[in-house]
Every structure is written in C-alpha cells, then in structure tokens.
Length: 197
Ligand SMILES: [Zn+2]
Image 1 (cartoon, rainbow, N blue to C red):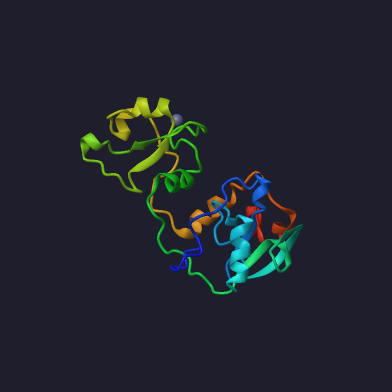
Image 2: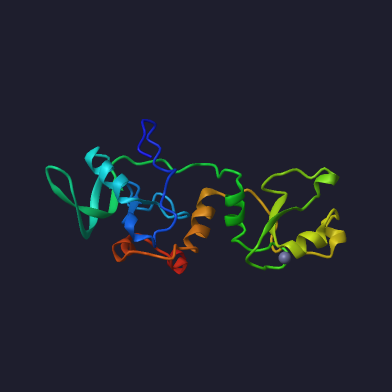
C-alpha cells in the first residue's frame, strides 16, 4: 500500500469486525476519511509502517501495544495523512461502483439482495455498456426486461442512470457503514446524512 507510488487508496481492511487487524481509520490531511466506501481502514501493520515513514500523524490509539526490539508502541486507531491526497475527479466505471451508485437495489422494483446488471437499451438494440445505460437489477426484472425496450417492457426506472460525481458516491457510501465502528473513529465519521442539510 505504501509503495513508491504513494497510492494510499487501494488496500483497505474490508472486514473491520475482524479485530485482529486492529484497523486504523485513515484520514486525509483535511481530517476527512480518505474513503467512505469502503471505509479507509488500514491493518495495524500498515498504520505503524506509515508512522515510521513519517507519512501520518497518530490521532487516537488502541490500548493494545506492539513491541519491536527497541520500543513498545500503542496501536494507532486513527491516523491522519501529512500530505493531502487530491480526491479522484472521476468515478471509475466498475461493477462495484455501479452497484454503489444504485444503492444495491434493483432500479426497476427496488429489491435488494441478489442483483445483476441490466442494459436499459438492450445490447441487441445497440445499447452500450455505460453509466447512462446500465443499472442494477434483480433477476426477475432482468428476465422480464429481456431484450425489450424500456417502454415495451412494462418496467419503470426509479431514476434515470447517469455518471455519478465523486461527491455523490461519497454521500451514498456514507449510508453504508461497515458492521464495526471503533469509538475513536466516531468524531471523524458522519453517518447521519441529515448533518449534511
Ligand atoms: Zn427488480
């Protein structure tokens, strides 16, 4: 993660409830999480490495201690990057980001759970694979839609699909907190979206 390219964004802990990782919340230099979805959490080894590389400052710590040959150090629970990382300007068109944009629910009937992708304008009718033409869909709606046009399918889109902005993705990501949140992270997380208005 802390390679020579300085890419801090790629390898976060996906299951923070697995506490043997003692995940550290990673904040950008503006004290906002580097990422909300997935929440930017490093395993403790990465956090301590970043401390020794002088790339982060420790904001909060666990009670647990790790020992090196020379010293004992408390495991960081919140770290802040010393250098600001510019947020990405474009949201990559990936399966995951598309599901996230659609809030993990079928864009026709609203069902959650097992989802697939549906081309609004079917590929057989020249529909392309793009933010504007692909939506998350449950299997029944996907089957019902088949190769029909939207109008002939009897289905309605809950909203018209479009390319989301990074801010929109942040906002959606905040609605899906991980199943474990350490108390020391709370000051830096605003899961209550009402705070935004
Ligand atoms: Zn559906």
